[in-house]
Amino acid sequence: MYTFKKIVTYILDILFPYECAGCRAHGVLFCNRCLESCPRATSTKHSFIYAVFDYQNPIIKRSLWRFKYENVRAFAEIFARPLYEKILDELCDDIDTHQQEKYLLIPIPLHSSRRRERGYNQSEHLAQGVMSHDNSSIFEFAPEVLIRIRKTKPQARAEKRTSRITNLHEAFTCPDPTRIRGRTIILIDDVTTTGATLLSAKHTLSSAHPRKILACTVAH
Ligand SMILES: [Zn+2]
Image (cartoon, rainbow, N blue to C red):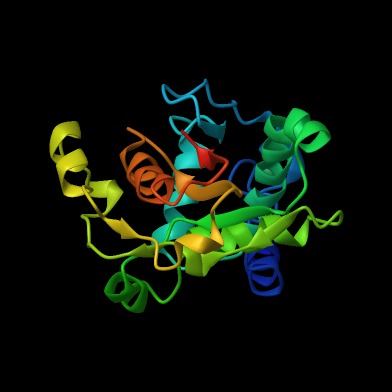
């Protein structure tokens, strides 16, 4: 019986290489039930930053690690829906009263050398995932608007808060300020801890006078 179970598991592993990060069910990276039951993030200390899940939850933490460092890009599709819903929640009043032009969806960029090294930018995949839910066409995907000009140490090996903030000073540039003047910007990232990266990006973009800047991350 034990051997039979092992054979079945072996076959399932080949047929469905993924298993749910929560309940280990075969065939999905994260089943809906487990995703829905993950604890939600408390509010961040920066009023422009919104997050969906609590980063302290081990299932969320492990999944985001795999998404970022182990090339499991399919997590973008899993996290894009709750991220999209969170953005809509936060924007609902704005959509009713102010929306004229599309909201610019800007993923936090990696430095070009880090992107080459990793082969992809997880935030860009998330933003593209959000775009795939945008049936009412209220978003415009604009990854070219923000460029990372300074390499920073990966967040996973974050140092003390103060040195991280110094490290991020002028980490970004906005090559074409006319693209964002008067527009509403939504920055997308996988995780925020101190908020330093998003603050630095906001600082850079603010000099081009957008109407408003929000940031939304999968976890905090
Ligand atoms: Zn599950």
